[in-house]
Image 1 (cartoon, helix red, strand yellow):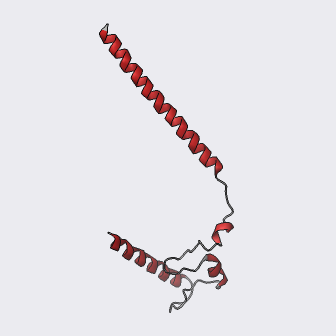
Image 2 (cartoon, helix red, strand yellow):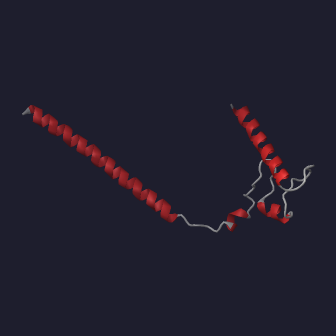
Image 3 (cartoon, helix red, strand yellow):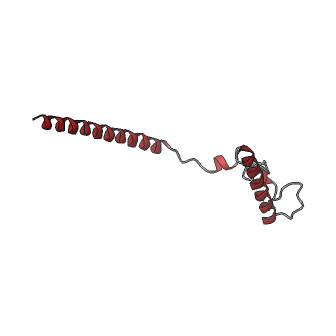
Length: 107
């Protein structure tokens, strides 16, 4: 008789834990659903042409509006490379080099 009562006590504690886990899962699911449903799909133009968007940072800190007004092909001011892909490639390599140097200093 003692064995049966001990087993039933263990089963009831397992059932209690599984119930708590299930309730926690339901709460998490509801919070996640609320978060996803509250997201508004903003117009990309609202972000692209703001001062926060600096696509070639850290080397070139001009924002997207300044880059578009500069002409049809990209060129970094004060650079001896013709405008276009070569200039973009140089900026990306310089940016990678700067970020790599900063990351190595932090190690």
